Length: 330
Image 1: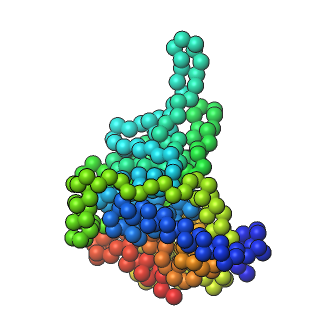
Image 2 (image 1 turned 30 degrees about the vertical axis):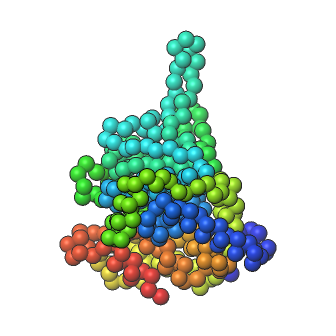
Image 3 (image 1 turned 90 degrees about the vertical axis):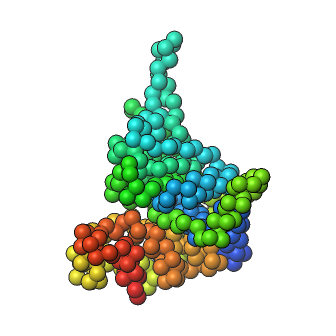
């Protein structure tokens, strides 16, 4: 038996597979005109968009997180809004609020910045947990509720949140419930010397933005529908489920490192995310089947924020990546 969609009987033809991979590469290349380095980050953000997921980007200030999100919106011709999260930001500042007209006495809903195709939640961990909760409904249900009325968000809708490492002053850890709404957590690395030189040459000169519009929202929807038809063989699906299940320390089959260092493991959303994104990774490589390598390629980004370590791990210098190394062993 295979993981497959209802219309799995209609196999995607080879031209469509090549077309998907070609379009994916075009998007990557166009974004790379403005973003130096970070090729893996660009690759994973495109995967998450097609998978209809949200992304959490973590990195030091000045590593290009905000510019990356703006460039993605430009290349895909999507509406874009930016929310700067601060300790005094209120939930209504994110979602919008009901306003009364002083002259007529009528009440109307004033939409907040969350009503856009791509929402950049900048430095999301500088806001308080009360404001974090305002994003939950939008991220999961793609709706906003004000009073007794529910408003639909645009389709497609993505939240790309940036956060600074928690050891920086003035940051608040995101609640586990909100972390689980992000399909990927991506670590934005500091650029190499060569990349830093290129960044400086570009940003301190007269060169403007080079990335141009390539596609629109319909292309994302088309690629999303195509990805749903990619089959996952039983053996590969079982391997993916084992990766998720073995992240729980209370289970007998879990690796010793998990039993010793993990407080609790991935939710079922992790299983959904690993299959959805592995399908897209396969298509982006020009293949119509998901391999073990596709599962491994997305496992770190799917699980990085879903596996929680205990104090022993912190004291012994064990990282989440060390644990995922154990989980993906065949």
